[in-house]
Length: 462
Ligand SMILES: *Cc1c(COP(=O)(O)O)cnc(C)c1O
Image (cartoon, rainbow, N blue to C red):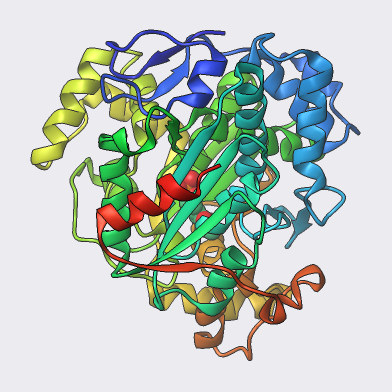
């Protein structure tokens, strides 16, 4: 399998290269050159298979023979053995045809574990094969850094440095990062805010001389392997509800669009899907684009669903590439214009998107209302991200004979602030984490100075 850029100018890459590369050199994102097909029989054969086996079968064509089957099976099995539920991503039936797909049973209680548990192992495999080491750097406002750390803690060939703003991260979220005491994990508390931390990471990627030639790798959601890993749970959940013999719909709490784009890939591979419902919070660029063709940036709003607080939706570019029928030049032109001024999609591509996607924007007041209402109706306490999905799904039930699967992207204990605001006493951490507040922590406080951070990385990487 070869991978091509959504802007049509960068060289095509192999799977191994695409895992080790972030953005394409033309500013685009990598996508597979062709979409492998899962026919009726292949889907029917998955009934009753374990999650790891379905994962192996769905992802194998994307790996394209670059990892031998036994090794890849082992990588997949190890990645999903870290989940605390035997089904990995269990379905929870809410009513006659509304289901929650619980993606939060991984080590950090949010869906990013599904992709990052695999990506860390894939990176380690390819680095070992090449006899190379790499450094990962990232910045976090608290919610997502831990998934990257957990994904890399067992990797021999990777050192990971995650910057968070000192004393501006909730205790649970800080401890999810700082209690990982592995030798290759470095938590840095920056005496500044999240933007300071992010700016230092960006500057380090732009000029990597401080690493003397060691590769710097990004594990953010533009990495193709993250999308690939997420395709699996769409297939697995649809098969559990009767695919390929009947259709399902999905509702996806969305921000950078990596999650729902993976669903779209499952559909393109042949999974029978009726439609995708996109839920956003008040940061609603996806909803404005689909509903009003208003493809423009707006001020960032801090919401109760912070993992969905974005201005630009980076993976939307991958869907635009398909909507523009893989015309990289047209995508490049649209996105370059969008950088500087409000834009709009051409009519035909927008019409194509509207065939498969509906969208709803859910504000904070509604998130609180939904948490209360869903609890009243189903006894479940939803996390605030999942709450946006629950409400969007309710608004889009459509054909009642088609099951609606809402993706539950985080465990409510991880976002207790919203749950408490909704009037609940809080949510206990799951049993395997109930000693989190007593565990030993390790992190280094540094000033918000690029030179200090880079010196720390250069000295401590192994
Ligand atoms: C990252 C995240 C999202 C948004 O997913 P995208 O792939 O960026 O659309 C939603 N909910 C939670 C809890 C997340 O961590």
